[in-house]
Length: 386
Ligand code: ADP
Ligand code: MG
Image 1 (cartoon, rainbow, N blue to C red):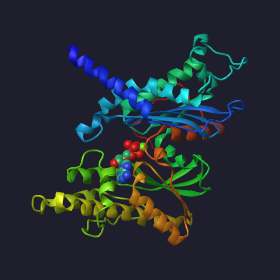
Image 2: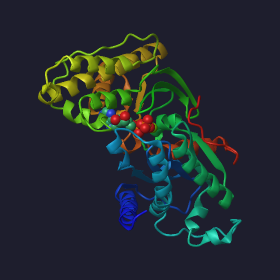
Image 3: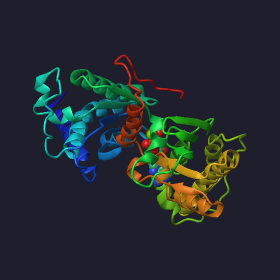
Image 4: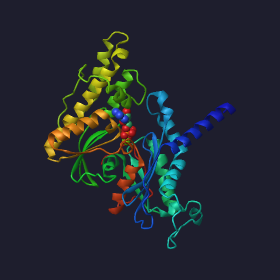
C-alpha cells in the first residue's frame, strides 16, 4: 500500500469515527442507583453498526454509524460492510456506554469479575446484566462481526448472552417509549429486505401472517429509483420528489396476490417497460410525478393488505416498522386510513425505524425477563424462520 493510499485509509477511518460521534442519539438519563436490568445490545446485520444501552426497557443510548462507502456501488457490498463494521464496532459500543453512563457508576462490591483488568477503565461494562446481538437474518459477514464481539464480551465479563431476531426487533421497536400499542397489535414491517404483516399477541408471541413473495417494499423503492437514475438508497429520494408530484399522473401495475402476501417485482417491470417507451428527457421533465405515482402504487399495495389483515383478525391496534416506515406518504396514508376505519395507529420515531440497536435492546429486555438466554455456541445465520 502506498503512503498516499495509507493516508486516504486513515482519513476514511477518522471519518467513520467522526460520523459515529455526529450521529449519536442521547436520551434523558435515568437514575442509575436503582438499576435492575441493564442490557448492552449490538446490531450489525447490514450496513449500520449500532449499539444501545437499555435499563428496564428504557433506552439510555442508541448510537448508529452509517456506511457511506456503498453509495458509489448502487447497493450494499457485503465485504465492504463487514470491514466497516470491524472499524466501527469498538467506537460505537464505547460511545453507547459513555452516553448511557456519563459518570462511572459506583462499583458493586459483590460483583465477581473474572478479569479484574476489565474494571478499569471499562467499569461501565460491570453495570451490564446481559449482552444482546442480532443473530439473524442479514449479511453473514456483517452478522459475524457483531456476534463475535458480543460473544467475546459475554465470555470475558461472564454475563448472559441474548440472541435476537432482527425482524422481531423491528416489530418490538414499537414498544420503545411511552406511547406503546396494547396487545394484540398488527405490525406492517417494511424494510430493504423484508415486507411482513405480523400479529403480535405478546412481546415474544409474534406470528407472520403475510409477507412478500419476491421483492421487499424497500427494494421496490430502491429499484424504481435506480430506473429513474437516482442514487442508492433511492427510497428517501422518491419520498422527497413525490412531495411535489401528482400521484395519479401515471398508472403502474398492482399485482393481485392471494391472502395477505405481497409482490413487488411486477411493479419494477412495469416501471421499466413504461420508461423504455418514452422520449429522451422524459424522466427529467416528469421526475416528481413519476416518484409520486410509484410511491402511491407501493403504498396502495401495502395499505390494501393491511386493511385485509384488520378485517381477518379484528385487531385494530396498528403499528409500522422498518426503514420504509419513514416514508411520508405511508405515514400519512396510514394515519388517514386509521381515522377512517377507527384504528389506533403507532409509528415509531425515525431513529427506531431504520436498523438500530435500541430495537435489539428492547427485544432482549423481554427475552431477559422470560429467561431466554443463548449459549456461547450460538452462531449467526443469514436466513432465519421464526
Ligand atoms: P434493511 O434492514 O432491510 O436493510 P432498513 O430497515 O434499514 O432495511 O431500511 C432501508 C430501506 O428503507 C431502504 O430500502 C430505503 O430505501 C428505505 N427507505 C428509507 N427511508 C425511506 C423513505 N423515506 N421512503 C421510502 N423508503 C425509504
Ligand atoms: Mg432492518
